[in-house]
Length: 372
Image 1: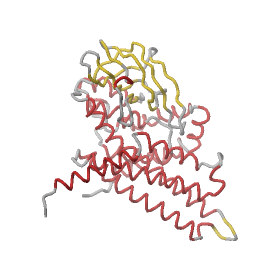
Image 2: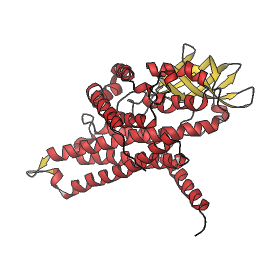
Image 3: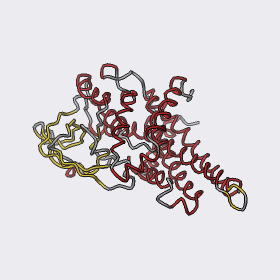
Image 4: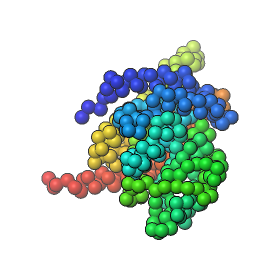
């Protein structure tokens, strides 16, 4: 297998990185935390103008016919800059649900809106755990009830919602416009630069995903795809935290020497680098499985999720330690990486759940092998 990105994909990476460095520096994430980030909306619009929102969408829906690998490239760069844009909710979750569970006619009604820059979101339990009585109710084409934790809920124009269907007495995934009959409430989180909201639906018109035979299977498939894409964001953040720590270690001097020349700091940076490279190998394997539709996708998703969560968390923590007492202050940007690492680590369910999925997948593979 060749896990290298192509020359065209590397060009995409370069252009997206240039754009984000100029338009979404770390000061934008800080501003979003402090004032709600009106500038972030403009950045999302300009990203749509670059064609980022068309990735993975079919040409009939305004897409460019590109695949998962290009979106992985963009995800890594967005993670590197901690960009406060609704990429995950729109392209990792809502768009994937439409690609997997909607007919072509339904896709052609909804996906062009994403291609043009409308934000979308996923109003279903992100951790995959649900209780029927806690879900909104779908009856006679209308949604009622609440969704307590919705990513980018304040910015989204429409949502894919997991609800109880009173007619079938089962579950159903529906598409809903987020208009005046949806009450949105911001939710406080550890990382306000990646905001969440709660929804209360009061007679909102909605339509079921018309090619979805098993809503829970689709929820699981969307979470696996999102796990790989989110792992690339975590990988980008981990690399940026390493760069920040290494840059400070080269500049900060004690006793006439740069602190990076001391063995204790060298070992910290080497440990971050090693974990990041281990996570990179898992992410690349996940990208291959996602792009090729390989049967290894569930196992690859779990591996990417676990390794990237651990790498980003470790890098963010060691970045603070490298900065010493200054690393704990509001003025230094270390806490931005730490906040993002902690929040992304639980966004799709905690790492323990994904580790358990990984172990069970490996055990199943071993049991399927013929005896020696």
